[in-house]
Amino acid sequence: MNMKPLVIANWKMNPLTVSEAKCLFNSVKKGLRDFKKVEVVICPPFIYLPILGALSSARQKTGGGKLVLGSQNCFWEQKGAYTGEISPDQLLDLACQYVIIGHSERRRYFQETDEIINKKLRAVIKAKMSPILCIGEAKKEREQGNTEKVLRNQLIFNLKGVSKAKFSKIIIAYEPIWAIGTGKACGVEESQKIGLLIRKIITKLYSSPIAKKIRILYGGSVNSKNAAAYIKEAHLQGLLVGGASLNAKEFIEIIKVVSV
Ligand code: PGA
Image (cartoon, rainbow, N blue to C red):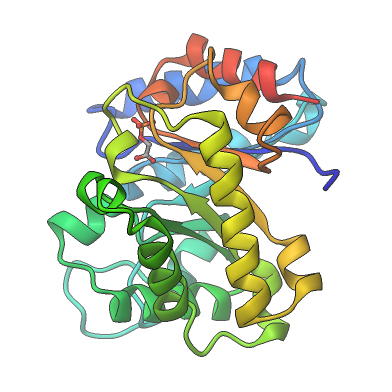
């Protein structure tokens, strides 16, 4: 598949101040000028979205790679009495194009079930944004040889009710839980195998042309040393970067090595 790699920065609950967020964003924007063949998505905490949106509108003039905003989460209803929640339409209004759905931290700390994730995924598609669906097995599941079963079940339940026509918006991120924030990234060969496995499952659930087109990303302890191999050797279509996306220099280096 010949397309620009998609590099997603998941800032999680960082940084702590508006000025740090602006500074990090501006550094990435500046660094991106030199690399055209990459698409970068910054997913900051909700509160920074309007501020960074204002900064990113000057993008066209930079002439570099594409830089857009995404969100780390959303609610499944569009409006109403849901105290503390953020709707997909509100995110769209802030120029978000992507929403991370089903991150393992949300599954674990906020008890997001497959049913909840499915509702959110469909709400994001309805709002005409792209959901980045995170799937991945825990350490124990991997050791017990259950990776395939776990991934298949997540895909079946998280994609429930999504028609073939709507599928093109979806991006899948393989994020093995044991690799997130641990410094123990998944091996390139293993990530390639999992990429092929995900395509096989999507072929069964949908069709072969749909499975061929879907973008599959890798996430979990990505850094500037291991980033290129996931794209160039494992033939995945992008990366979801957590910790390393908070360091502008390191993140720009990642962009540089994957830019084709
Ligand atoms: P990490 O996080 O790069 O810090 O391992 C990845 C993620 O949680 O998306």
